[in-house]
Image (cartoon, rainbow, N blue to C red; front, side, top):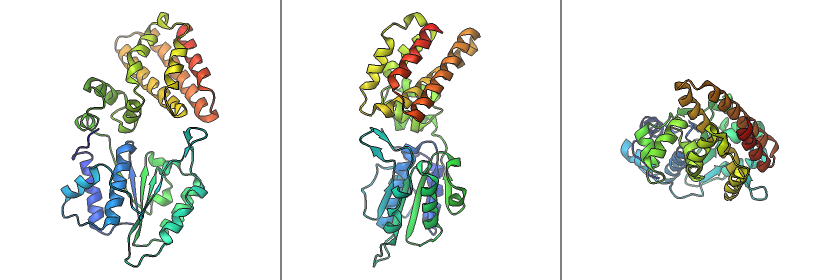
Length: 316
């Protein structure tokens, strides 16, 4: 993937104005494309603690949009925790997961060294963890700063928002989107991903990472021709998902991809007035939504969920 100097130019310019004035105790970066926004947050943190002199906007923009700079002892990252035994990420971060933030900021430095805590994502914090962060924000220190990445604007405590500067990141335009992922996939498929994800870099990164391009045409054929669904079709898809190291993480992304693919097919069918097939696909969409929620909530055996899906495709 390639970075582009013009990615989020207006948002980065807003950050530059904040950076050149008195840096606030807390900055919230809100947007769907948390992959790119997280990199911006890390580079901004690196810039703050490095005390580098940035003389103009273009230098600032280049610094933020380059690959992530080196870590520093003066940067603390609060990020999703991967559970090795369960091969999935912890669903929420709790008070004990953020307890060392206070110690990090309490460390005294002779040279008034700035320290930055990056929270990526604040959406994953439980209420007690978020309140612990709020307590620190409420006791500002000019050398201590939070840079908070937030995907869903409603999942950030209003009290934290009221004490922070917030910048909203919109979706990438088509040219920047394609340029950012150039080399990862062919442009025709990137165009398709831009359409079905509404330009979401967050979703696109996941879909490319799991290489769902391989099943794209085949699954679309199954949607419109149930005779193509064979007795072993479900097993083929189960084997396909088992190829991923973190299969528990891959399954909800897989279901999400199928829903977006179905949604795109429904739009095409509506234009052709194929109402019976539209109703069938709506039912399949609803089923996948139900299966995905059960998988996430109850951590069910995904193989049975896949079998249920293809049974419906065969006999609906």
